[in-house]
Length: 218
Ligand SMILES: [Zn+2]
Image 1: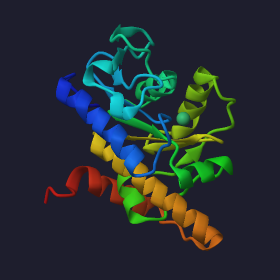
Image 2 (image 1 turned 90 degrees about the horizontal axis):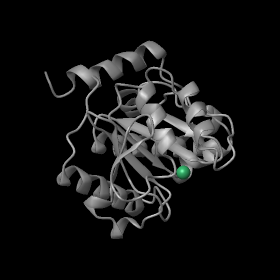
Image 3 (image 1 turned 30 degrees about the horizontal axis):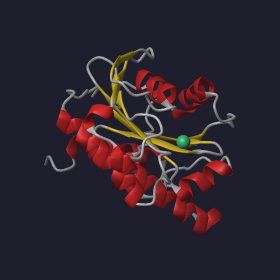
Image 4 (image 1 turned 135 degrees about the vertical axis):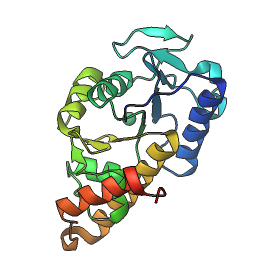
């Protein structure tokens, strides 16, 4: 693992299409969702405060993992620090998708972490989804540090206390799927509460391994 993407007009359009899907799927309101894609040098990230249906490929911004804008005329997303820090912390993640998915946000408001209790969570998320401590809005670097301190080495998602969620993947499609899988799990948690039975850790590990290395390959 440790993949990156080649910057292209098609990739930039794919990011925009994923943003539009986020809205269509009810995973974010207005422009409070943002996406980053790892490049060989830095990352491509969505611009700050721009309506998704007005976004064009040239509006995407290239930012180094140290925070320097390398290309683009727009301001990068206000959550750039969060994306940079997580891409640095987890070289196995190529795409990050931040959203305010409703059920995941509900859990984040309760500062609840989410154990793995559905098979698809085991496959695509791989480990407990931890929730950060509360970070006041606007303290972007503190939020980035908080997310890095709880993501661990395996889990593909983190709940951001009183805010939302960020989920990763090896592609845009996979990061979107991880967000949807997490949202469904958050719904199950919200409706079933304490009666939920988690999947044993060794089985979670086996399922994740099967998804990464064997699924569709044998
Ligand atoms: Zn947000």
